[in-house]
Length: 114
Length: 112
Image (cartoon, rainbow over all chains, first blue to last red; front, side, top):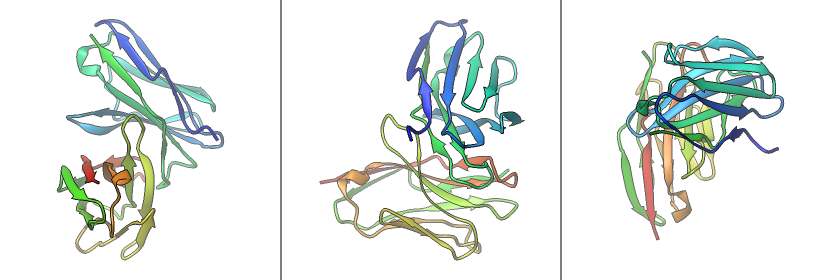
């Protein structure tokens, strides 16, 4: 079992450019989560999918962030018109059902917006 | 809203010292409580969980007991090793049962 896979591991974009981050959850896990990690804010919940359906996106900045899960083997987080304050490590996690079960995290994608 | 407070931002110990990292929570319901550990360049790793009052979770020599009255879930280890150096996060699931709320983390440095 390879664990949760995230690509790319590092991404550098210029201000105003688009960034797409990819996540492959553990096979068999029905729940997928996205988090953002910064020194100042720590780990922040962004969004949650269960059986590919979006359940909760309450942590997503509304205007430029979007997430999709087109099939059970991958999810994407897209940030349009990136800003320097979007610089962070974006973590994807998966779990068996989502309800009070432990989450398995990927290594994260470090996004740097210049 | 629900929250988790970790008192110590940094802890420095020598090998074989006793470790306590304090965690207190505030929640409207009856949350599940977790400890995660994060090593440099990696995502957080699940350490253990507890779901009800007085339940003890444990793994790799670490343990914590769910204390509903004190709203606490303090992490302890009897004898730390240099390899335990990492950031430790206390967390809970909120009333939705899927959203995990993390504390700010405690950076443990163990000196050889």
